[in-house]
Image 1: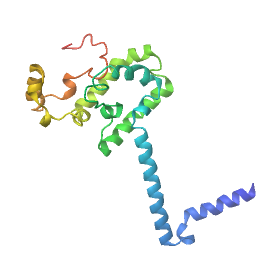
Image 2: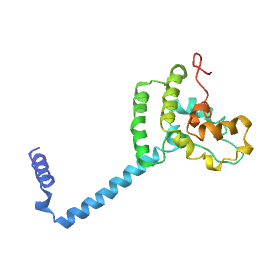
Image 3: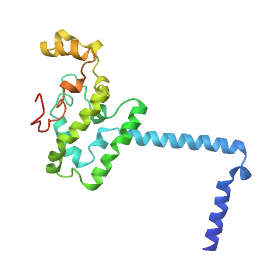
Amino acid sequence: MKALFALLKEYWGILCRPSVYFSLGFLTLGGFIAGIIFWGGFNTALEMTNTEKFCVSCHEMRDNVFVELKETIHYTNRSGVRASCPDCHVPHEWTHKIARKMQASKEVWGKIFGTIDTRDKFVALRRELAEHEWARLKANDSRECRNCHNFEFMDFTRQSKRAAAMHSTSLAKGEATCIDCHKGIAHKLPDMHGVKGW
């Protein structure tokens, strides 16, 4: 036990004053290599959590919202272009992505404490969960929608009259955003009883 304590004390001394034991060049190179390893590991973990496979690895997502997504045009369509969970729920830009990841860490607590671990619990909280996501999309002007959908490339002549009217006026002027009209586009709407306009 004394030998272990002495060894730990020696290593602690090296960690506290590394310049006494190692050259500046060695420390600089070592720090650079450690930084690359840390950054690579961090980004690898970040990208692993940005996959549909990761999102549906828990049954709460797989058995509830993912099943619904499979029935929409965002999952299967004539062009074969498919939106996955991170496309709509995780921003592409790094700073926004990190902020969203920190925000989503609350979902880990939900998993641990079983907040929506049954279908009944999910249905009971569905509207609250949807309203949080709608508010997020409203606040960022539907940024994730705009990663794929762009007004500059829309052909209004191929849209319905109503869609063309909305896209060319309210949305184009910034008076509204995608989520204002497209709630329930990829997942079923919760019970909207009592909500104005529904």
